[in-house]
Image (cartoon, rainbow, N blue to C red; front, side, top):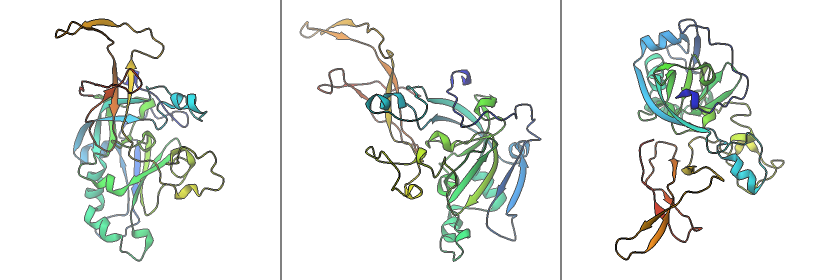
Length: 298
């Protein structure tokens, strides 16, 4: 349920909740000049839903700072001190970005690949920018946007209801498997480009792949460090909660009559980029022995 979802914004929620879908407009533009297609169009959210196939996906979104409080115990970090809860799952409904780019601009993976040989750098489309009403600007690789299995969605519904204001009403981007900041809320513009989006949320230090020993960026060319996109595998225990007294029960081995203690545990495991979880192992003795968890659907 969206009431249980974590809420993470870089700015206050824009006052858009009273605007009907037929009045909220987004602009989509490309540097390509092709006679058969316009290089810039403006559509309402209603236009999108009526002119393109409406699809639903179930996808998890995770903030890049999830579990930061645990890292701060080792050494102080900056940002919201999240526990294990800056991650959530929902059913999203909208139209695929791929369908929009193909229908309205005639783009394809083959065309994008051929454009990389262009002598005009502006024509070498490599990134898709998402610009929000709150000022945030982020981008993803064009390959993700155009992939038939990428499932990048322009979503106007969450769990079969209109998007709540704090989760992006009236339109947001859902980029399965990618760090939360690429799932831009309150979308107002999509721009195709040869370069990544500018600004601190794409090119600044907050969403870059620095090594753990990096303490200062004074001598580092930050814009040359790869920006975070797909997220790596991780797992977390959610029950019992931290510092909660454990309730163990005795388990008798029917073969030899020996008695051991059992503590039920629950948690989640997640991997970005569409990769599934193969196995989760849990240790109660510092890694001397391991127990394989039972996996269920997320």
